Picture 1 (cartoon, rainbow, N blue to C red):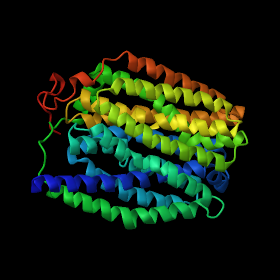
Picture 2 (picture 1 turned 90 degrees about the vertical axis):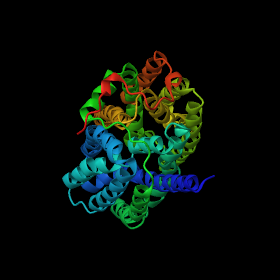
Picture 3 (picture 1 turned 45 degrees about the vertical axis):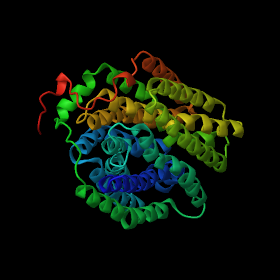
Length: 418
């Protein structure tokens, strides 16, 4: 192995390690609100529906900014985007922890927090995997990067549950913010500094944001993937916002819920790695179909959570599909579209995904306030996810056309500068 190759390998390992840590920590902004949801509502003396405005606004702002952040990652690189997001996350956590009024918490978490988390999300991580590995085993590498969120389910959610009776939610958020600014921000800046020293790879076509967005919507497979991803969004919203209140309504203790989430995280890791490897072997479509089928099954199980054992099994089934849908969809996008467009396309995908999250977040809370249960939300999510299986099944496999990164479709020729 040449010296250049060794340096490149060392950089990739360092980039993967730092990105994994940032991804792990980045999940804390959402998971703390997930676990402390009822406590935060009580702290501000508001209803679930009122506090859910923050999570709904979070989803809407994420939807609005996802494609822009994806395009930014295409243009300046994923690593600088991660560094900016790290700094913003730290600031958001500190301000949210000291918010004296609900409106201040809602604006900080729902607006600035949404932008910050999006900068550490699956969109820039997908671009990073593609930029570092350029299609070679990028599915497995992307799965490794995004497993930071899965480890968060295993480690952080039980930690927040443990601290629930020992520390106020304000103090927990403040401590995490300090970790972001004191530990993670310097690491991310070191990664930026190292990345600018490396010999740049072949430049991707410089495509304007609007052109890249148009290319995405003109592609028939992209339209199908976007519609299918709505099922992913609705179910992820239920986990992020409504799972613990739903379990609480059925008399399930927080310890059982935390155990289920830990099992979910463990299976999420295994499922995502398996999905990444299967996609690299040419089974992208089958992997995505299986992931959506598992997701629909898991949501149906939520109708029978009166038995604690069912909650644990739900965590296992949902976990196996949790990141598998994300990994397989991301690999599909990078194989169906040329460089210079992929980040924007991933952003568009997550924009629609987060609109589904917003509807489920607010709609589920309103229905729970009206009917005192989440049955309608669960059934709708299960049906939408089952429909995603059918949508994916109708698409030709992306694997046959994979591997040609130099071809540029007519839609983006000639490149358009911004």
